[in-house]
Amino acid sequence: MTSVSTRYRELLDTGELRPDEDQERAAAVLDRVAAELSRKPKRNLLARLAGRRPEPVRGVYLWGGVGRGKSMLMDLAFAAVEEPRKRRVHFHEFMLEVHERLRVERLKEEGDPIPSLAEAIAAEARLLAFDEMVINNSADAMILSRLFSHLLAEGVTVIATSNRPPRDLYLGGLNRELFIPFIELVEREMDVVALNGPTDFRLHRLGGMPTWYVPNGPAATAALSDAFFRLTDFSVEDRAKVPSGDIPVPGGRTLHVPKSLKGVAVFSFKRLCGEARGAADYLAVARRYHSVILVGIPVMGPENRNEAARFVTLVDELYEHKVKLLAAADAEPQGLYPAGDGAFEFQRTVSRLVEMQSQDYLAAGHGEEG
Image 1 (cartoon, rainbow, N blue to C red):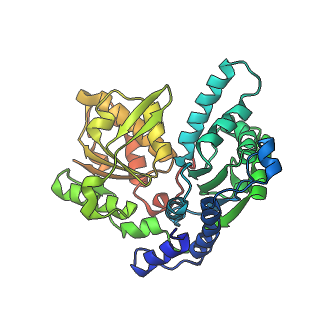
Image 2: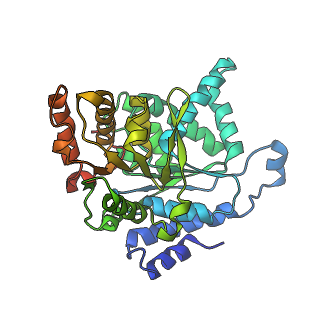
Image 3: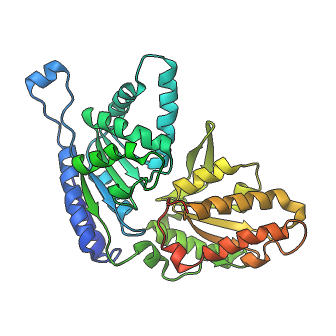
């Protein structure tokens, strides 16, 4: 097994990363988790006879500002764990799945559905790795404490990343006092590790590159392709191997993402706004990805008002969730809908698109609704 710290030092040696004391400390903590999970769990005879699961390996909660290396370190830890029953999933996607599975369990009318759901999840994964834990609604908040208590009792280990420390989760939320037990559970049962080094590595990778390119064409496409590879640390030589993905949309549908890697999605305007889509699709994108690359944005007017309306909804969701938007268009934001019925209403979107290019916006944490 290649340890997290060893792989981290290799990235430092090749110049892919800069030295960061917080990252080094986090790598050492993750080494412990990876090593313990990679060992075959041991139980004494009495525990086996009683059918009890082994004690879970203590998990880790990594938190810090945007671009501080949380997901990168989780990548290294996940790869280092030699345990076949492991799963990495975006936190929002996991919670959508949890709500659906709870709905199915409740239809059985067999009492409290959470213990049986936790048992089923534990049978599927000994390690759960969550990207971007953020709580924005009371439904998730009310479930989490009980579900995670049962998951830990079932022997599941959790590694999670978040932009916020545990005490700031669901801050100001409805009935937040009912969420406090989950915060206490995280602080008690997981190692909480802060990553607040001086460098925003995501912005550093962009190297001050623009986020809006005019006009559409080969030059803009090449620049955005470069940005994609910088944001994802994916080799340019492997461009033909960039994976696609499918993300769940409320209502039982899925949305195909042509290029999906490490929290970055690539779409064409035609696919995302030219087809019949609604707010649920754009909300799923905004919650799942920290950065979206959109190509082929045309100049719009009354003749393609439907596409313009979808684009407005898309920008609203990306803006509210602080998603970075990198785009190629036939005009600057101010010229996207220059005249005609609907031009006045489009000005709010213009204002948001301009703000989304600012350094303050680009430095904001993904998932924190504005």
